[in-house]
Amino acid sequence: MPAGAVIVDKDQVLTCGEGEGEGSAQALCDAIAAAASPELASPAAVSPESAHPSPAPSVEQYFEGRVFPKGQSTLVPNPGSGPGDPRLRQALLVGYEGVAGSVMTPGAVVALPAAEGSAVEFISLRQVAGASRETSACERWASGSWRVALRDFNRPGVQIAATLMSAMADEAWKRSAEFSETIVTGPEPMLSNLGDPAAMASCRKFAGEEGYPMRAEPFSVPRLGIRSWAFRIFEEKTVRQWVEVVRTPRYVLEIRIPRQWPKPRTDPAVLLPRIAAAAYARAEAALN
Image (cartoon, rainbow, N blue to C red; front, side):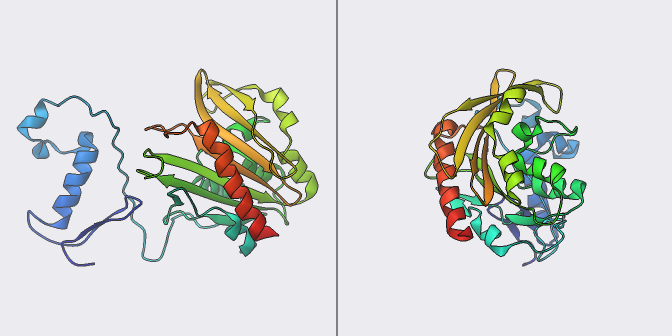
């Protein structure tokens, strides 16, 4: 890139060219970082006006900077034992109503067996919820079906595809938007275990990763595949996630929408079955 240039791509990744002087790219990068994270600014960079901070803005600011070697999209390598089924990668959504996957952490397929810790780290980058620190019979509700597949069925023939979709200012929703998708393939007994809504009965209430009381409450969605079901995850009185699971003879698909701000214009409980229907249609086209 040209000296003195500053590039910010659609994923808010900041790249600074080399340059010198007060107007250099580095100075601009420092200014951007200081504006996004005022607490990190040095005393010399604080202006007299900043000594009397103005009221906090009504919209939260978010800034993240990441630097990767040329041609490398993530610092976490795929821990899978093979390349995975290319059709499974094609089965993942690549866009929905203006929401798209990240170029830095694109959707991927992990072929098992794989080192559990590395697989958790790799897949969590593509999910709206990370794995629980402690093994729990209820962790699938907070973390996802993929976590149960990895923990209990980490063997040849099982594959996990995962992707994270996001948008900061979408024209269709006029709001921030984020959701994740997983598709798990493997033996039929495993799929039956992952796609069994009756298993929730013993996990309506459970402790979250930080010890806060959590609970799962089901709600109705249109049928997809053999069966489909949805639930909300509450942390105390706040909804943290909206989840839908679709079970088919060949795979289990899961969509998760997290609580986010600004709120999507459409209720996530209404968005969820729409996204699930689009994901199911794409998966059926790719895997049939």
